[in-house]
Structures are given as C-alpha cells and as structure tokens.
Length: 287
Image 1 (cartoon, rainbow, N blue to C red):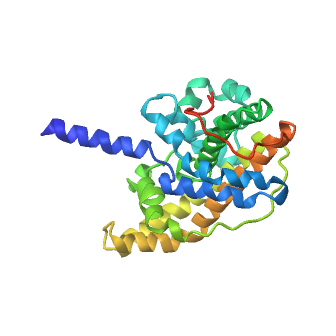
Image 2 (cartoon, rainbow, N blue to C red):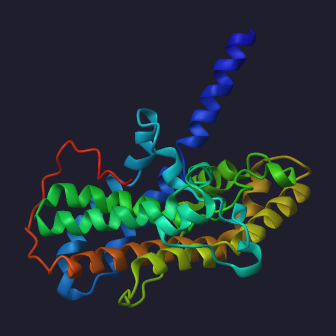
C-alpha cells in the first residue's frame, strides 16, 4: 500500500513539474502571437498553428532531459538585494561571478535560457533552417510565457511559504482549463527591442508584482468557498485574477512577436518560404 501511495505521489509531482501555464495557457500564448505581426510580416501568421501545436514541447522534454527543468523558472527573490533594488546582475558571466554557478542553477536559469533560445533562432533564420526555426520559436514562446507566469519567478512557487500548497497547479492549469477559452488577447503595435537581455529581465521584474495579488486572491477564494477547492473557489479565483491574467497572457504573446521580429531583423530579414515542414526535432539546445 505504501509503495502504491509513493508511486501516486511521484506521478503527481511529475504532473506538476511538467506543467507551466498548463498546456492550454501555452497554446493560447503561442497561438495568439501571429495576431501582432504587421502586414509586412504577414507570412508569420502561417506559423500560428505550429507555434500553438508545439507550445509545450519544452515541458515534454523534461521527461527525458534532466537539464530542462531549471530552464523554466527563476527564483528571483532568492537573489540578494532583489527585494530592495528590484534588479539582479543580469549579464550571465557577471552573475556567475557574483552569485556562484551552483546558486544560479539551484534557482533557475529562465532569463538566460530565453536569451540563448532567441540567439539560436537568429542563427536558424540566417541558415534558413525553417523547420527548426519554427520549433525554436515555439520553445522561445514557452520560456517567454513562463517569464510572465508569477509563480515561475518566485521562491514561493507553490505557496508552501504561505501555507497555500498547490496554488501553482490550481491557478495556471486547473483555472486556465476552466476559463481559458474566454481570455481575450489584446492586440497592440509592436515595438523595437533595444537590448534583448534587458528586455527579458524587465518583463520578469514587472511581472513579479502579480505574485502577491495571486496569493491574496487564492486566500480570499478559499475562505469564501468554505475552505474547499470547489467550483465556487475556481469561479472566485478567476473573478479576482482575470484582469491581470489576461494582461499577462496578452503581454506574453506580444513579447514573443517582438522577439521573433527582432531575431528576423538581426538575421538580415531573410525571405521566408510559403510552406514549412516541421522535422522531428527537439528544439534548440539552450545552455
């Protein structure tokens, strides 16, 4: 019996670690990105289905790639000085020197992996490896989405520090599965990115603020639902988080569009083929 319980517990943990924004959330983010592209980049709109279809490839790789998990988060509030200065050392080598490589690996590599995936996309645009580029763009969208998910950028990633165990899955998977179809992605004009690394860190810094709003919403919903995670709880959680959840998902889609566009520009604006066949490819190696 104990062995069976242990197996069930491991399975539950695997489900948790294999998810981020849930599959539905990542499909929404990647699949909505094409709406942001201007007419001159209309061909990117043909990528929409592939970006959505492969939006959780990065999560799926965790099943066989033990190095993948740390790429999906950064416990940014574990860094000394962050809560006071709202910044950390951003350049990777300088960060290694200040905080130590083992500290960084322990607390997640999300911003640096997002940046290296972006540069892999540039290289694939330059070499016209279109099928790889689509899948790398899908991975890029996944990491961008994780950088817009408040519980992927805090040490209190599953509410354990505040007695709210399980909030991660309740919010990004269970709630999104119930209400995700009603999310309206708000489209706005793209902007040129000056410094890609700074751009990535800036949206992580900005999105950190929603961590407390989410935890407060969870507490209120749980209390009003008679301390049960029932239908009423999820409706209340959605009511209280809908505004910033829609903003985070919209911002994720727009950020992905801006990064894809910038990668295309840095690659010399290559002409894209009308059709792209996706190979059996596991995505760019983001170190």
